[in-house]
Image (tube, rainbow, N blue to C red):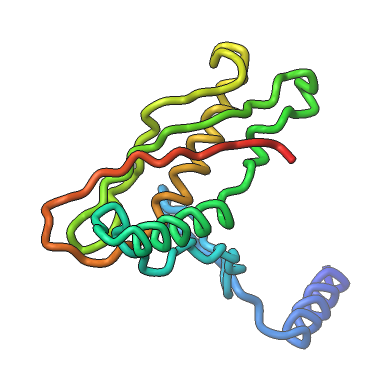
Length: 171
């Protein structure tokens, strides 16, 4: 009995020497939260265009061409063929969706784009049924990501509507 009491005393003194212990308690029905800082996930910077001119209202042909060129330069620079549209290892023989999407963009008077831009039509190399649904959704999402980031000059008009063609070709 004495040896048990002595061993418990030694164990207790060893625990006290090791430092303070932190106990966690959560009430029933509440999750136990970790102590200390949580790792912060890195969030990719949101894509945002420079303020573009409303080139479709321009009467001057030079300004119209310059505005259209700036608009399509931004779109072609930032639109990439999405990885989600490429065939996966599970289905390596799935066809690659290539072709053109016609996307309607509604521009508010303050120059922002009403979210999300709407895919009006898909003109793909094969019928849509030949592609994986996830591949078509990836193309739609990429078009919405790039065109949703557009910003235009303010206008007095109520709202403008554009139909933008986006071509997706794997290179």
